[in-house]
Length: 98
Image (cartoon, rainbow, N blue to C red; front, side, top):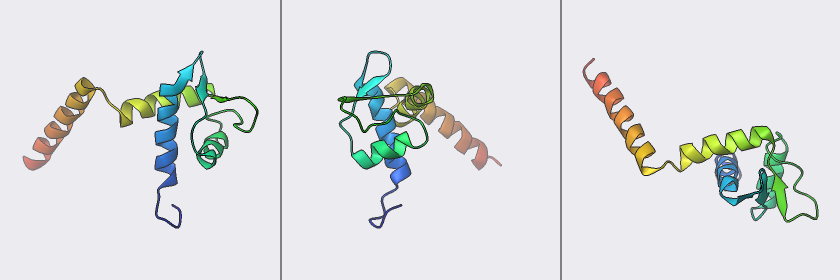
C-alpha cells in the first residue's frame, strides 16, 4: 500500500495480466505501463529488465504463466464468469443449508 492507499500488488497483477494483451512474438510485450510497476514486476522475475532501449519487455516463462492465470482470473470470458457464478451460488446454498 502507498500513502494514497493504493494496493500496489493488485496494480502489479492487473498490469501483468494486461501485458498478455500486448504480446507480440512469443514473449515480448509493449512497455506502455508505469515504470514503477514494470520495475516491481522485474524484481521477482516476471519480466526482463525494462530499463533498456527496446520498446518492449520480455516476459519470463514464469511471467507468461502468471500473466495467463491472472488474465483469466481478472478478465474471464462470459462463459467462465457464468461458471464461476454458478460455483459461488452452489457454495452459498450449501452454507445456507448447514
